[in-house]
Image (tube, rainbow, N blue to C red; front, side, top):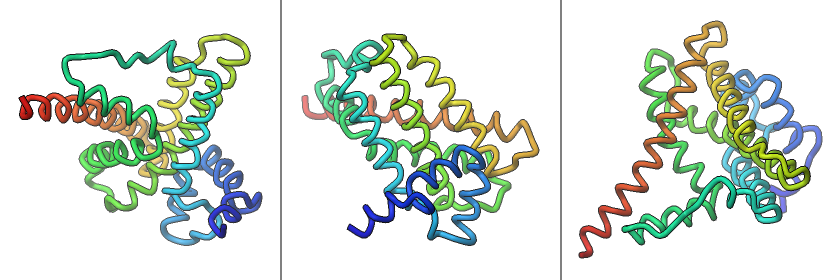
Length: 205
């Protein structure tokens, strides 16, 4: 009950967190890590709540059927993993964040930021990404316009900008490295599910 009350506060809960992450993501996350952790929603709670919002939007409007198709493949385990990912975005985002964080550590190895701090950053900004996609789902369902590709691009731009702002907002290279790290993290996560599924089925034969 305490967490629910904290999330719904307008001055320091969910809506305050969303506003801060939209206007000054890198700076507010740095302040959260080093100064004040009382005003923003806890990062794990935030990404789970925002992923739930997207899941509900997709449940009502079923837009993923027009973009994603999990078909029967030669690996039933891979199909099962893919179905789990699409049914549990909150937890899947946390796992994917691990892969993205690894790439960020490589690209920004000269910065004095540890893995835990990067994970906090990713939980916040990936949560905003889920809200962008949730908005796309609602607009797609109401208007019939295929907006998911546009909002996916907006999400990638936002993530690159917010992560780059966290590390070094003065350099364009920070934004480019942030975008590359996110893309590689997503690709590595996707590849790992494929390897895990096919590898398990191969061992069981």
